[in-house]
Length: 194
Image (cartoon, one colour):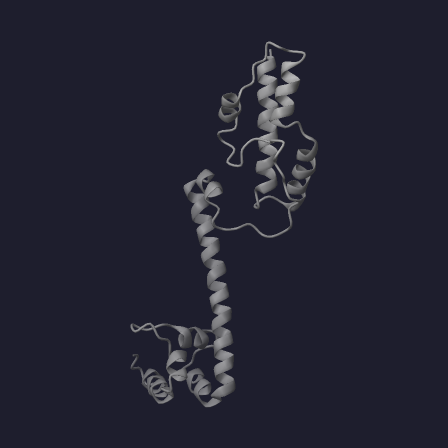
């Protein structure tokens, strides 16, 4: 049988849960917005305390109870002062420590791999932009690189690859060392890489 204290605790938990739903950017926007709408009319801890004390004076609800009941809710309980903004559809932030702490090792690995793949895709696209800009200012150099037998995307990555000194071949071109880059291309063409 549910006690009056358990009912009060459930209301406090539910209010805190609505806040967690509203602020969890990994959830669909419709769920987050629904949580905000419900929270606007949901009983706050003050309401629960008042409701519990009037007709049921045997229910004792104190701040320590509320803290204990909402210890697993990082954003706390629903209070009179809680103001939830209507969420927008901004994508989830990848570095949310709270969410990653709840995930298993394989889930965290999958998330990290997805982030690395997204980062790699962005890097590849940026390298292709460097390659195309290089082709505009020095088509002879880009043609020579393609003669090695690389595809355009491979050549783009090669031109952006950083050496021991932290500079890429594209950096060398910008620094006025085009002749050194062409010499490297020729050595590579003949089987001497470096």
